[in-house]
Image 1 (tube, helix red, strand yellow):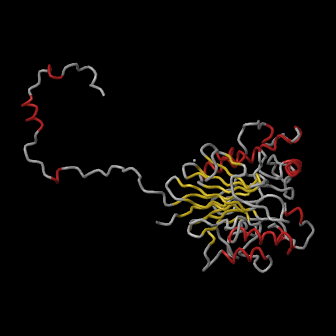
Image 2 (tube, rainbow, N blue to C red):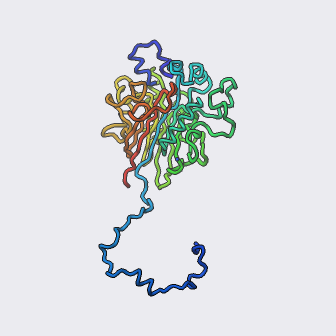
Image 3 (cartoon, one colour):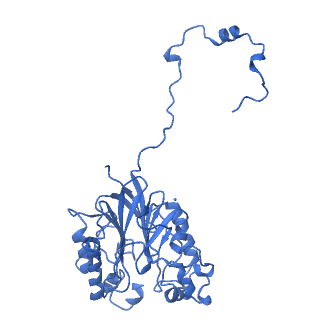
Length: 376
């Protein structure tokens, strides 16, 4: 959505603005009635020479049940949104046109709603098989009730009925729990129930299940959300879901600075969003901390809390040598932690990992991270 706003600006500002789951044997009734010479049978069985250990076959290592706790899990952050400012009508024809893009912007908030992309996202996540996910710009299906019939063709609202799961649950499948930011149903975190469940969320979908607070002057709803996951194996993880404000004007940059402070200083309840014993921060920062520190105060603010010799570190790559994952120039979708480490790849950017869909639709690429759990 930033691309459309920056049309006609200088390249410098364009580059910056782009940020913005027995029986007995049959047939024998009475074994004792059979005429068997038991002495002859025993003599025939016993060998002429005594059995020694060397004559025995080697022991077989039988598989033992896995009683050890998992040492890793998979985390995904994915901004599933789209934008009008993309080459939707360029060949080859992928089925998504500029007309679709206009409807998406007008009625779906540019969130994940095009049916073909929804199905592709579901297939991608089934293949990745994550344990936790942070979504940004995922369409909230209850809003289908407010969309006219002529704007539903090819979108999820064409077939959605009240009672059907919202898009976030639909792409994850069964055995998941989704909790969203207060006032922002397009920004949600999810946990696979084999891994854990959110404290305070008693159902599969909790519309405002994350803790979060609106910042005055920075739009409605919470752009930073906190969810505490009770792990199946014991213990907790505090998951911080982030979708920072988008734009390059001074007011928007200031909002991003305040959102970083919500993560590390005070969410709005007197404690940082990342206030657990083990914290995992994921989302779309709408700035590149590794490249834009001199141009964007919010990028500099991230690296004042996250980086070498700091309490938190990036798990995703940052810096001028990092493989760009956004607009071919930047890295704005990130995963961070205080105690967890790991490695990540990006679908559609990292060699060997194809894009989620072969269509001009997503303007972000998901980051997929294998997170290592430190020994107790």
